[in-house]
Figure 1 (cartoon, rainbow, N blue to C red):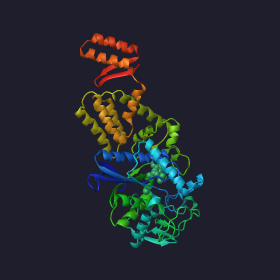
Figure 2 (figure 1 turned 180 degrees about the vertical axis):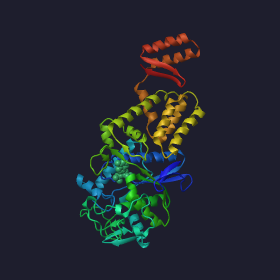
Figure 3 (figure 1 turned 90 degrees about the horizontal axis):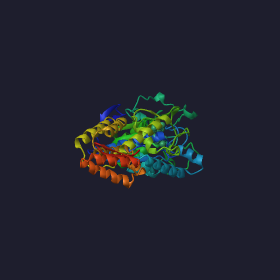
Figure 4 (figure 1 turned 120 degrees about the vertical axis):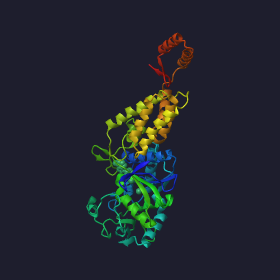
Length: 467
Ligand code: AMP
Ligand code: ZN
């Protein structure tokens, strides 16, 4: 499979560190508010990546953190603590809102058929591990104490800006949100590993440490949770494109300084979901959620389908017309599948199966081209092959796409339950045709029509539908 790697800026063959296995780390949500559908675009595309790797036979382990401490509103070391902001807004404790929004996140994921990662770690449950790794960084000379906090010293690295062309001058520290520049830092790009001098008087979550009572920075969470659960070599690290800098850049800096060798081979970044007025963001306070889509009558799976229609490396504009178009096209898939899904006779046509399957795997093998994979799905629906072959293919495709196609097609058929009388006549007509008694077959067809149903013999089998 060819996968675009943000680290090398090109598509590369995906070769896992250990043959037959793949380790994936995903930056989890900051649980101070509901996830918006932009965040969920990222998790949908990561889920599809994971499912496709499993589909190709790899034994995948995926780990995700839950950010319940340390994430400041700027993504750097400035601004407010997001969790504290959420707690104040709702007059609750930080742990109460963390629990509430973690549950809400997984409930949204379930509705979108996003599989829960194999390991999920709330940052607050790993404090000892953060302290241990920070201590190693200090001992190795990569971290220093200044003004009560522990900082990572980016000048100790040969190359810090690994992803893009970020330069130190581009770091808007000191201008963003009117926050003072942190004069404790030796270099502008340095970042906090452990805070003791909290800017926030009411900081609720604090832990004892050799560096003083305080709390961890956001970036160290992901490095530690990944390395502890997935070892020294990580195959794929995922996240939204906004995470590339500074979050992922800092993760690489501290992980490789700690390990003494390269850490993660492939970086998978999903581009943003935007609205016509710009990037969707939690901190702006106005955003679309899965519950809101449901309130408006949309099946959340249609949002998943909407996301699959676009490539993950292109930003995607959300608007209601586009979503409505996705509803129409999704319903068409279900209707077409409903026509043959109940037909179980016949054998799989292996030539056609292989040909149509190849369209699907070729699409995924080309940097997870989900929109081409949907075209491959349409190819199956349009093909002349028999019903069992089509059903078998769609079942396989849906292991990756996660669109509940077979399930919803069956439901559509149940919704229109065909009366026993009609089914009996259809059977009689089948026998009449077998005996080549076409006069009788026609008579039976007329009876079926009179009962309000249409019967059609196709190459794929008999189709019955309400007129
Ligand atoms: P957060 O909960 O803010 O830590 O973000 C959770 C995930 O959503 C991260 O991987 C972000 O990079 C990603 N993300 C944030 N905003 C968007 C957006 N508008 N579209 C897609 N992904 C996003
Ligand atoms: Zn992270």
